[in-house]
Amino acid sequence: MQKEPFIKIKPNPAGKLLRHGDIPWKMILAAVALLVLVVMLAIGWSVWEASAESRTEFGFEFVTPKAQSSWDPINDHFEAWPILMGTLATALVAIVLATPVSIFIAIFLSELCPGWLRTPLNFMIEMLAAVPSVVYGLWGIFIFLPAVVKPLGDFLGSSLGFVPLFGGPIPASGISRLGAGLILTIMIIPTITAVTRDVFQAIPPAQREAALALGATYWEMIYQVLIPYGLSGILGAVILGLGRALGETMAVTMVIGNNTIESSGSLLKPGATMASVIANEFAEAVTRLHTSVLIELGLVLFVMTLLLNLAARFLVWQVARQVPIEGRV
Image (cartoon, rainbow, N blue to C red; front, top):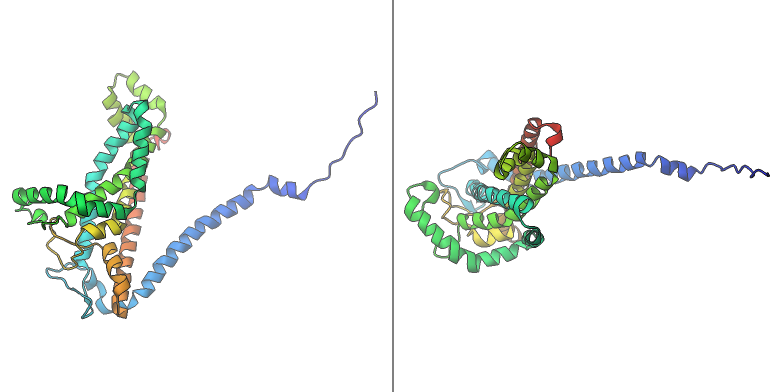
């Protein structure tokens, strides 16, 4: 029997490069990760440089608490404490109200919802997250504020008016920090819900089966197994929602009233946030100092967001250390 001739294949340099493609791939990933860091540092440096005049003029008094604060673009005198307080107040109202509601919705969608209803509800949640903020603002002005916020503000002012947080009366239009906080609550619920739902769905089914096999009820399985195992992911979802609440602009600008000198701390009074002030005044700033002040507001918001994310990562890391490796989400 005649043997087949031996064919010698010459090595292909291109094929050799493809076989070792993990090295260029790692380099590309490292370059992209480094690009993110460079962009963040560039943003921080640019707003730091552009706000130099404001920092030189006002120093730390720009953000320190005062009984009476002034925001006077005509005379170039600016004190940002009421604006900073309005930003924190609306964001905290939103995150305190949205977190439990979002977690309950996520539990229902991932564990209790019938199959025929799960897909439509998931679609509706994702659609709420995609609605433009200006639409939320218009809906808030014409429907939500007069129908919900005004009656709620009257009730809180009459029953809890002795508490400085609810000192009234609320304006007849309903425009207030409370209205902005409730609008933000509605806006961040879809974000927290979607991420938390994915966290619960990523938990292995064996964890549920083991808890139920040991005699746990369905509710005990949820709060003793699912929530502890997915706690780091839930915290990440909450921080993501808080970050959006801090930086939201258009919807808040339309319903908060944009009062830059209100320092009483009451949720029933009109106020302002850093994002809303920048949106309202940046195009109309006529002096270099006014522009520099607005950029410094952006710098303060940038630093707040950065510190918030660092604290969130530390908190998630601390929580993850207390959960077994096989249970982390």
